[in-house]
Image 1 (spheres, rainbow, N blue to C red):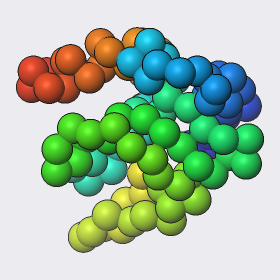
Image 2 (cartoon, rainbow, N blue to C red; image 1 turned 90 degrees about the horizontal axis):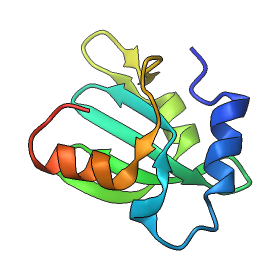
Image 3 (tube, rainbow, N blue to C red; image 1 turned 180 degrees about the vertical axis):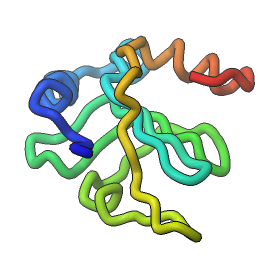
Amino acid sequence: MKLLTKEIKEKAQKQFVKESDMEQMVVAKYFGGNWTWYLMNMDEDEDYCWGIVDGFAVEMGSWLMSDLKKVKFKPFNLPVERDLYFKPMKASEVWEQLNNGKHV
């Protein structure tokens, strides 16, 4: 499965220069193991990503797309996948729902 489509890349790169994180749209959702990554923006090099990460805690931070592509979750070596049914939504809504224990 392709983690990064042309449409997702364009939307994420367009938001890279925005100032307020919480006003940005989450444009894609990735999951693997007990972790979920919500992509908000990315640099023009297509590797540096910024968004909300739900792992040990709900945090805002960066990750490398190249790392997501390499990760395999044990015991079956499952890769990170993109949620094909995720509809873009405001980061503030994702943040609030996750911090209230709701599934996004």
